[in-house]
Amino acid sequence: MGLEKDHPRFSARSTMSTPSKKTYASVVAPTVAVSAHATGDKHATGDKHATGDKHAQGDTAASKASSTNPKGPKGQKSAGQKPAPKGSNGNKKNKGKNQASTRNMNAIPTAAAAVAGSESHTILFHGNCIDGWFSCYIAYSILRTKGALQMYPIAPGQPNTWPSASALEGTHVFMVDVSVPEATRAHWMARGALSIQCIDHHASAVEHWSAECCPIHVESCAAIQTWSHFYPALPIPFWLHQIDRMDRWDHPTEDDRCVREILIQISHKPVHKRFDQAIQMTEAFLTHVSTHEGWSQIVEKGRVILEKKDAALRQTLAAGRTVTISETELLAWRLPETWLGKLVYIMDNTDQPFDSTEASHLVFTHYPETDVFINYRKKSFRVGGGKNGMAMEQQMYVYSARSQSFPLTEGTIFRGHPTAAGLSLLVGEAPFFPFLYLD
Image: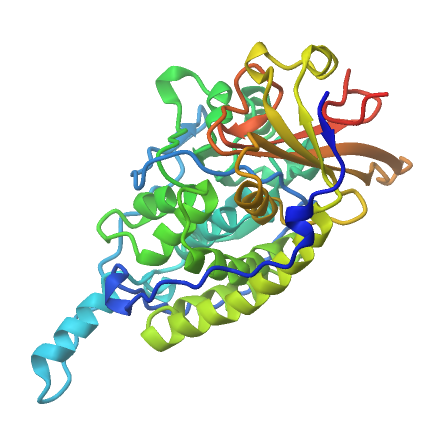
């Protein structure tokens, strides 16, 4: 085993590289947000924490939602609404038309334009995840006009964060950026769910579906696919391409990383049962990115946050350890032969939760020879405690894994994307816990 406890490259103070100048015109047509304020829907929420599943390759892809529905009509697939009419600007007629066209064709159409219906929907989305929240928001912009709507942030692979089957009874279930096993879907249907649709892009979720109706498409993030599903007639706005690069960590720019700091704050709100704040902050973001000045303000605000975060992360990561995988680790951690000789940077961040994605970026920047970055933390949570039961405390190890190109999910228990995966193992149930210190 190769072990290095001190990492001088993190000890030295380093700064972010100076960004290249970017004109607003170089960005795909900006979007303008048409406010869709909450209409008194009761937003339900699950528990928190989602392992950071990220990246793959490619750019855009229209989704193909899969339905499970032996009981009645499939969940509504809303047709794309027409953008608002192009406007004029007095004597500046042509200029006004061009500006209005650029803005409106990328807008999320106002939900108030639709007539409220009587269908009930439930959106299940990846909690604590930018892609998950924006997928939910896009679906919300349409489904809230169909009737009652509830939304649950959940964590893939953590059933304790999933709603009960009774909570889904009488509703059309729409999963975005998450998927659950077939047995779970069958249970929900048996208990009264009207239909189940899914838009997801995590490669490991393919095993949840038969080949004939698999809705998993890894070419783009779930938010882009959700947009294409609900707004097929509209072009994909530039901020969704940013989210795609961030989520799949597909060559994100420094500006992307700065904007990500703003969007992370929004994505955490629903997990803490603050849906109204999340919606308001999302609409404020969309309004800001509709202008050059507003977009620049968001980037610079995020840059300040990112610089502070990176300074703290560099100090934290200095305590990490590097392990060159030998036969000993292969056997103890049940890894495939492809891991032999790989250099793995490991962090136990139980006492100091941090942003795994940004941490991995710093590790791969300072230590380009590193093949894999893994951090894990031990967390406690309570289960049960209903009317006739006692609450019990359970513990689990939650892992996040990132690689530069090495396939993390092949032959391992990691789930997610090939180069960004996660894992949750319950203490007392899991047969082993990989990447912990070996005596």
